[in-house]
Length: 359
Image 1: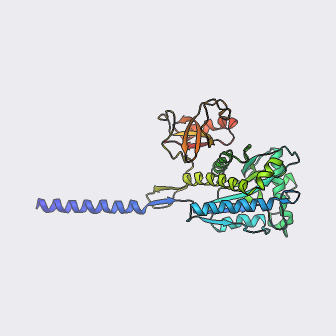
Image 2: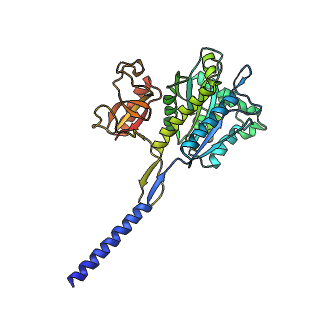
């Protein structure tokens, strides 16, 4: 009798463990970046910024398509959608609609800058947000002004006037739930772009771009360089330069995706939110990091920098190698909140700095 009871107990235990294992397997959800929308700025009867017969719309389209091809080649399962794949005019609000209707996980808008000051040069990446900086406002107003080329633009944008500063008050009332993720991706773009061919880092900035306004996912607007600057222009119009720029954006995309994708267990089987911080993704790290699980990444370089390198600005840095890049970070924090408190001070020296998980 005892033998029978024992066998029944073992059978019940096996059934329970099997059910638990099966349930755990069912409740593992893969949070994965599946769809990206790439937006080539301007197009058709909207040339964008110009320099003689050189038009922004052609540069942005070339870089956008090169970026899309890199993503397709390396991630065949990712759905790459273009807001335009040829020289056509697409209204700003329709660009966001394309992303929203396709449930995009990421929106990348590609542009080229211009300035009256011919010495202005370099790359910068914008996320949606209020900024009182006059230079940023002028860039934003220039990009937004293309809505006047649309039919019935006043009703499309609820009476918004891109030339009237008071119209921008509405943006200060908006809450962007994807600001942190957008900023993280923007910081990656800036850091990978530092390797050239346009290497002057103008930082991550906030501005009220209409094309980002209604996006319901992380979204960035990249200004690749200045069409008004002779050095930037040579790179922007050179096929090899365009390819290198696209490759840098792709490297940022790859790093962002690595942090975005994760498999987690959820008791109810529902899909969790994407993680806020990114993993360093490597064990090849210098320095003692045992005291904390978070750090602040400040830059990435294709070459190993000496301790006194001017790029490090006197900070006590550690580094790890990821692919072809050396990534430099500071600090060792036990919690993300602790790292967040330190982040503003680091960003005074490195505007594109962001928190990483080094556990």
